[in-house]
Length: 281
Image 1 (spheres, rainbow, N blue to C red):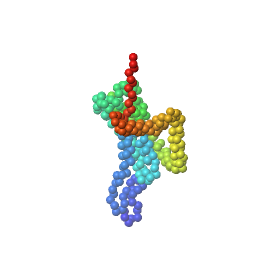
Image 2 (cartoon, rainbow, N blue to C red):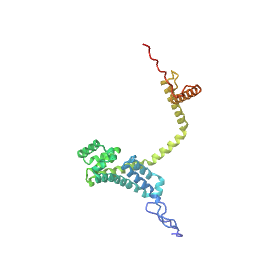
Image 3 (cartoon, helix red, strand yellow):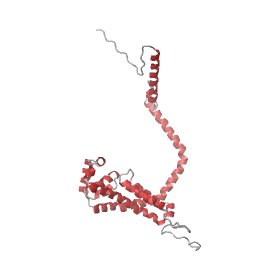
Image 4 (cartoon, rainbow, N blue to C red):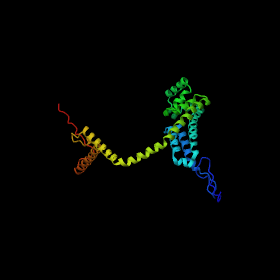
């Protein structure tokens, strides 16, 4: 309280004050942005967005390892791990529900017919009958087949409890392992990035010189492979076709100007081949 000499109270695990003396206790909703971002990224990745599902998990682990995050969030930063697990399970459950609700009608639509052609669909069904729930565990490690596998689990009416158990077997230990590996190496990764940026400033002139030498070497290689032996500019590397097209246009314009000066000759942009005279018999 003001004037008491005691430090202002804090939330459990959060190092910064919960409120300032004389101000209303207002929650800062910007603190939720990282949690929401990681959650939505995982849901989008699970629904087929072109990002690996592991990327948000690794990002969350690196984020939790930052000293600034530890100072701001304290123990609350560890809530991002269950948020990641929840995002993975929810995205998989949504795909399962879509397949279970619409059934085979969904597979007849153009988008899903392209995603799951009949031969691929039959192959997935055979794997389900042959390997059972283990197929879901294998699908976790194959980004290109995750969405079709979970949709087909719903289409085939796999029991929801069995689906969630199989999904959780990967989600809880798998996501946790990936998260803590990223957290453990997060600080080391940060130091490597900083060292790389420092070295980049040193070698930047050498990189520019290497790029110029590479371009010059490519042009020389193309020139030696295709020498201008006949004097045709079209054979010159890179710029040859442009020069040849420009010369053709100039030649056509010159012929048209000459044709306009001479009566009885129609201007033409294209050369006309003389008609062969009939042979005498």
